Image (cartoon, rainbow, N blue to C red):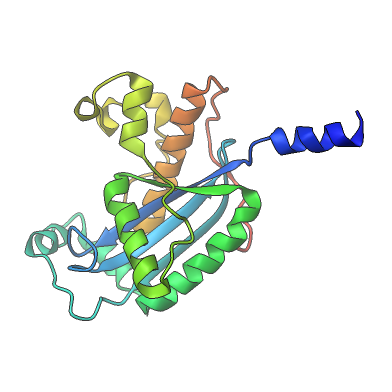
Length: 217
C-alpha cells in the first residue's frame, strides 16, 4: 500500500476507548453542599483488562454540611467498616484532584477516557464539581456513561424496569463483591460494564478480569 494510503488508513481507525469506572462515596446527595469522602477509578479496555487504578480519601469541604439521612445510612452495621475505610489517610480535595488529573493524563496512553458511573448522575457530578472547583477544568470533559442507561438499551427495557437484580447472571462477576469501598466498587462496576458491552457488541464473553495494572496506582 502506498504511504498515502497507509496514512489515510491509520487516520480512519478510531481511537480506542478506555472505560474509567468511577465510584464515589459521600456524606450527602450532591457536591458543594456536601463532601466527597472518597473516590475510586478503575480503567478498563474493551478486552476486560484492568490497566490502572486510582483512589483517594478526602478531607471534608470547608463550610459544607453533613446530610442526616446519609449519616444514618453510614451508621448501619453493614456500612460502618466501609465508612471507617473512607476516613483513613485523608488528603486535601485539591491535592486529590491534582493527583487524579496526573493519573488520567498517564492512563490516556491506553485509550480515550470515558467515565462510567452507577449512577453517573451521582458519581460523575461529584468528580466534575471537584475538578472544576479545585483545578478550574475537567480533564475528562463531559464524556460520561451511565451503567443502568446502557443496560436498559441492551436489554430493550425501560429505565425503571432495569437494575442489577435484573441483569443476566453472566454480566455479574461473583468474585467481586459490592463493599461500598470506592475502589472495590469501581472495579466491580467496570467488569459489569465490559460484560454487557461485549454482549451488546457480540464479542466473546471473557469470564474473569485480566489484571494488567501498571505502577499507575
